[in-house]
Image: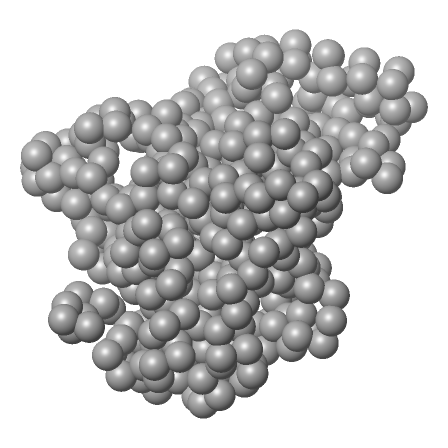
Length: 432
């Protein structure tokens, strides 16, 4: 049987996964979003037009692709519908979009609680997007969440909402001193406004995915966020509330590991992070400012300035292990065009000890001094190059060194924002 491909971020998100997902989707018959919510934006540039998507899988722009939101995603129906409307207005059909009946719904109280919880944490806040994602996943874990399939049964929906809201209203009123929310108002909004729009799209996602695989068609599994935002494997607590790693694709889509044969880890040619948390290679100088300016490192959704730094091979080695990467895809190599020198962190010095693997005790990350290898820059514009063999030798040396450090071949390289500004590396001269 034909197997599935997973595209996963290897850093702290914002690696430019959407573009590669969109490219790979062209060869696929189905693109599945397997976790996260509308806290992750991905931007696609097609024929000079920019599309910013949050929930709908990137494959929606390929008319032959069946886009699917799987069970591991938390869905805000209002956001989903406005995204569908935006695409329809711009001539992209969303008729084929399918949503798993097992996906969980984000409800108004999740957003209230998200904002209140961040306020409560004060200086220790996580930097969530306050979109209700974490509280929706918490309800799922506490077995009191409402799922997309609950929209099919109006009476059942009202009953479940009533008992869950009773609990959350106690928290809102007694813990946070906020007014309670009205179950009837919420039920009206979800059942009258969202239900009729979503019902035609609700599906048995597990069957759909397996039918594609059994037909011998290729399926792409797309994660949101990235490895170091993973609830288990990321820099906890500054993480998301789901599992973006490749194993999360199995759980979030309902397929076993044997069904996956290609795992593409997307990494930026430098590094960025949003919000709080440790960042050993962070730059606080003019080079950092340059990366932010040239790379437009501001959040797709939030507009927040991202924290810049050099590529960290210690992190990438860890990402390669926990995702079992089969290849890397490097984005934004062109952002480094003007730099005199470029660095890669190959190990950490922590209290005089050399670490080549990520220390499991995260407190050590705050004390880590990066040990760098330095490369001369190429000092020319590479955005028009179409093949890896034509890259300046300095750029090729940088990429080859990254491959050696991580132990994973680089399959594709982005040299600009456009859909076609990608070097595919199949044509590499093997004798080099």
